[in-house]
Image 1 (cartoon, rainbow, N blue to C red):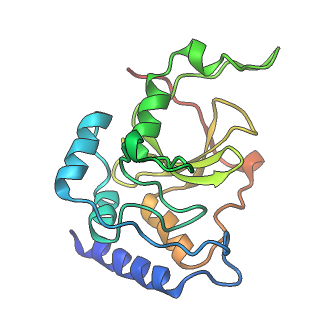
Image 2 (cartoon, rainbow, N blue to C red):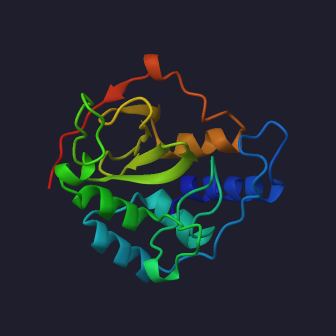
Amino acid sequence: MDDQNKRLIERLLERIEQGPKPEDEYRSRKRRPYPPVLAADIERAEEALGFYLPPLLKDIYQTIGDGGFGPGYGLLRLNVPRSTWSNEQEDSIVLDYQELHNATAAQLNEQLPVGGTPQNRWPTGIVIINDWGCNIFSCLDCLSEPDYPILRRDYNRGYNEFCVESPSFAQWLEAWIDNIALFDLDWENAQKMVFPFRP
């Protein structure tokens, strides 16, 4: 772990220990990390995904915990087997990505309203890491080194566009540590991106 990631993880741990603040988004939820994962868990997840996860994300999952803390409803867990899902059906980075990325265009658009814009297949290397509720998600672009931007996918705004929520994963986490309201986003004026599907 490099020094920069170590300092950020120390700040994250302090923020988690403080608990929700009055001005915090989703303050009714007390965010507690799940137990950390092992290096072997990371390797299995990357093999299932077909690409590497950003070093900072790996450090966080191995040092702090397997999701359950952070903005919104917290970082998703890394890879929760379906057989252990509770009634709340926890999402996980690997399973969500596999379901979205492997779905055919017909599967994605079977509920498409009349006259609606067809949904593109999910792009390679972009994983959901946070759920805000109401079909709004923060996604991590794992292929855009070295910053790994955070992209917003808001299905209430459309099915194919992502917009830039933060230029880097580290800045996104620092904003949460500093109590910046990450959910508030000027969608109309934000930079939009449409990714081609790459098998």
